[in-house]
Image (cartoon, rainbow, N blue to C red; front, side, top):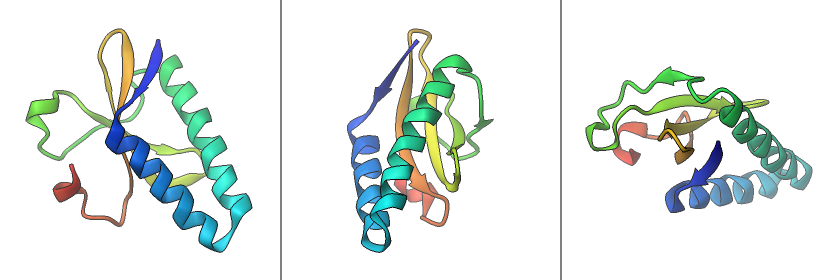
Length: 100
């Protein structure tokens, strides 16, 4: 199974890395490494994560799972049968309801 990262999710990852790099470039680099590792785990276990409680009817069944070692950064993903689609990657403190 492959990973398909939607444009908004790519932007989310970039924004989070830039934000983290303002305090520590090594932490930002670790974040990027851990997100790749987490994506790999999602391909091995596509049903991992809790069903998303937010109303995302047009998207279907979306699950949420934290980035390894960054538990407050959440990956919203969907198993399409042929790939894992990464919909958004957001910090849990953000207004998730409005962003999704």
